[in-house]
Image (cartoon, rainbow, N blue to C red; front, side, top):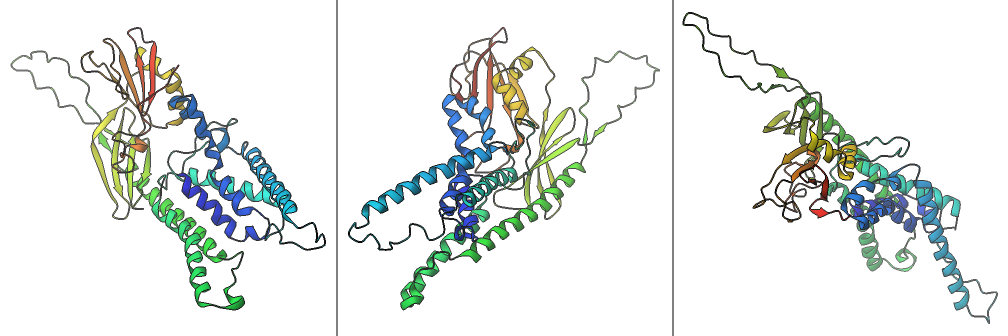
Length: 400
């Protein structure tokens, strides 16, 4: 999920009542809910290196306890700084004076650590619900897991979380203007019911989308297509009285597996891809009406060759094939006059471009194609001897 949704989720988790039991709970949980995405710093090493480590060790069950300890240690430092500042500001002439407490809730570091760990787990759960996936058991198990029921940005989830935090604040503001005396005093742990309702609403949305997702998969798996006919050899002239050869019997292929990817606006619209063995086929499903609309263009799988094998052995190729469950690979041989890669650099004559794309991000969605190209597309450029000379991700070249 995108960062703001993660942060709002951590804040809502704290507002369910956890902030009553440990000081700094809202701060710690809001930070922790987004903290695993610190792995984006790997992009400093280049786009392919960033792609290699995205949702890596910081998105695993092994890494979360260490991340929670780091966050709590940082907040402990903030607390000590606040204590020192408060002691410095307290008048020395009244040593027995009871000053205002630093926190409304008691300071409980062990409990805060558990709450921080819970917020970190929420990050993994939210990322699991979209179609990019996570590797929670890495490095012991490198398998990617993805529920593929929610787009990377879901407007309804965002609205539920934002409403749970903003609407109670508006009500408190209105109440403070019309109330008087003790009734106008601000409650330090208000809006618990709003936060719980928002989180339950998100769980309900996930459940509904899971049902629709399974229905979309079933619709795709029920399809079949005619197998492509092999190239016919030139016909041998027949004798005048010889019978005509029989027409070839069509062979139909059944899907071996299928993926359904969510639309950000409609829970009934799914962008699908089916693996028919020798080829892939894109499509679109309306799970409410039970309608499957296949794309007339199919994507044949490439036969292993020197160029393809060389590209797959590159850093980009290894990382991409490890992540993508249905990679679309294409090979092109641009001419020296017109050939450019996705970064706009000219391609010398005799070079080959192997393109890696993933059908999960090829749906007809404005949010996916706002940049003008299919996201998460990589290219490997090979010279005439099939040596890797350039690798790029989303048009950004990986420096050596």
